[in-house]
Every structure is written in C-alpha cells, then in structure tokens.
Length: 108
Image (cartoon, rainbow, N blue to C red):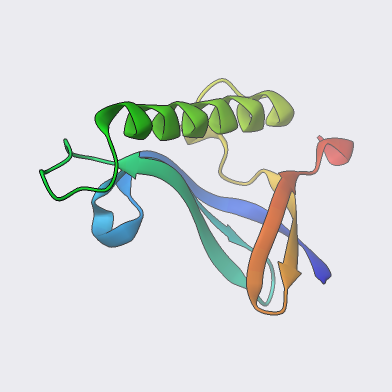
C-alpha cells in the first residue's frame, strides 16, 4: 500500500463508467506522476429480461453514488460538482490499483 498526494482534475455527474452506459458520478484524479479515474453509479437504462439486476437495485446503487458525492462536496466545502476541480486529495494504492481516496480537509 502506498499513498500519493494529488488533486481532483475533473469531476462530473452523468453518463460514464463501463462503456459510458452507467449513470453516476466520476472523477479524474492525478498527481505529478500519476493519474487515475474513479466512477460510482448504476446502469443508465431499464433492465432487460436478461438482466441480473432489478430497477430497484439500480436505483439503490445510484442513490449510494449521490450520497458519496454529497460527502465529497461537504468535505471540500463546495456546493456543486463543477467546483471540485483542483481540490487536493490523498489517494491510496494497492500496487497499481486505486484502493481509496479522500479530500485533504487538513489543507482546505
């Protein structure tokens, strides 16, 4: 495990994730020598007859993504997702995989 300092380079709410077919919140994070994306959300369509998920389960996942975004906005002292670019963060990696990240509230 290692930690890296960086900033939110881009934040959005809308379609993204897997083949841009999901609906939720996404971030591009980066530092001087690293960059990574993070997305949370559900599918951006109603389930087909072959889906292994229900509309209710999908709504719950999208709701969790909104709660996650709310908490990030509060930590950063912002009111809108468009204001998050440039916010300092600390990212934790397990090898090359992003494990977690947080707003550096200590420097805001």
